[in-house]
Length: 364
Image (cartoon, rainbow, N blue to C red; front, side, top):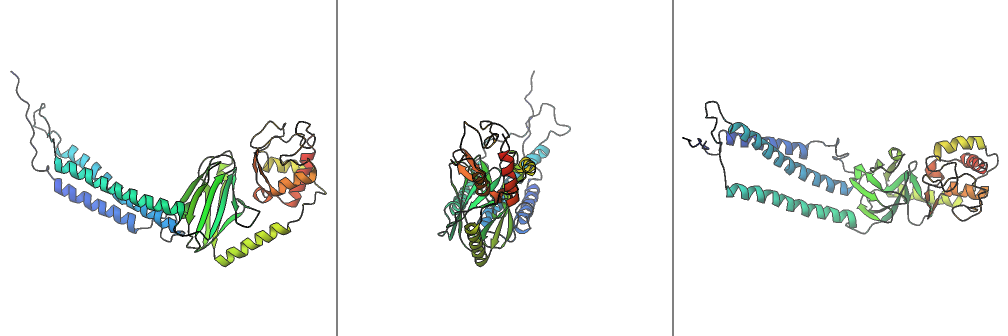
């Protein structure tokens, strides 16, 4: 004759419930104090001395999620472990006994639904506010710059200047204390424009322009990184941004404009084809093959550059003369076939250009 299994009845909230609750609460307070009041520069660079206003906004969101996310984790994991210990089958209890059965706890279910929901609503409101400030700014920008990502550097363009700065090897410059709008896009593949100290990142997508609005609030030199794999030299796509006084910024920009206006043509006399071949392997072979035009890597093949009957002109539509080849090496090119950085981006001296032209002209 079968007997009814023994039912284990709970006593209150369980043995040791309130001491465990107090212990978990103390642990949560300690974690919150670490997140809110101790330096977190190892995960939030320059967190104690923000570089830009948006950095403070992003850090606030991170800390909000850190405090309440850790609290939820500690309570859930803590009470799972507590229940596993407090309501285990003890020695001496029948092997067919049934553990504590809890069903329909409306108060408990109400609070574990309402509290996370309220926190999520607050998080949504804060997130939308920060997103709006990043996308549209809080005031009209004093400076609008364009960042065009290439394989494998960032081209920075400034208003009223036909030239560009490529980083690396050059540097992006911004004035401290002035609202800035950065327009981000790509000339080839998908990249990510990321300045960790600004806490801002934007996908650089061909055909799409992204907005980043910020006000730099501290001078210094900070890293720019591409944080999305974009090709063989992705790891080298690391530039610099210099935040300086408005006066220093204006002097720098005026100097760059003046240099672009007075830049002289490169002298091609004495170009060394052998030296150009070595330089081509170092700086050009990643994007161009010594092969027919159709054998592209990133750019077209360059064999028979000056005497290809199928392609009698350069990509810019000009005849393949030494001077026109040098012009592309010096100024770069952007068109339907893609984009090629200028001499600054590629780190080419006048002698380098002369040697490369001599080598390219020898590819018969």
